[in-house]
Image 1 (cartoon, rainbow, N blue to C red):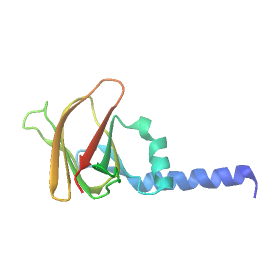
Image 2: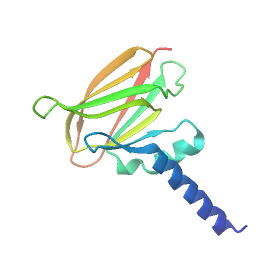
Image 3: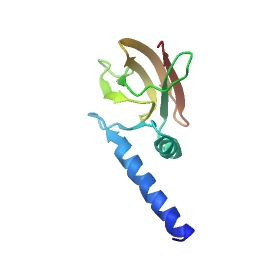
Image 4: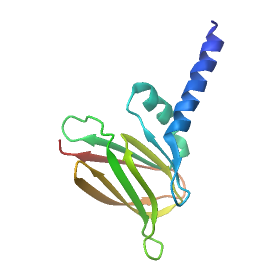
Amino acid sequence: MTILTMAGMLAAAGAGLLAASMHAGAAGVVYASGGIGVEERAVLESARSEFNLRMTFASKGSGEYRADVNVEIRAIQAPGNPVVLKADNTGPLFYASLPPGRYEVKAQSGGQQQARHVVLPQRGALQAYFYWSD
């Protein structure tokens, strides 16, 4: 097997992993979640530039990644603060592509909920870290 053939196979495997990790929420918001294994994390990281909200979920102290996080995102600049994305059992990496604006992000894991207001810029991205007690 040549190096080119192997590279092609790895690229195809990575694309399959990324496709399996990508979803569209009810409001049409595209998001990707995963990163439990090294390979899956590398595939998600390679696509991170496509998403303007990038979140990482972990435990306080140990820094151990968490993959049991329920996420809800509301557009707080819109009348009625509608939910634009709701996803269960996500993480430890969670990337979303949202229009620029103000949002409330709620993340729940192990019965503990955190809420944050985030502002997504016209250009660039926002990285947010959520930590829970063990």
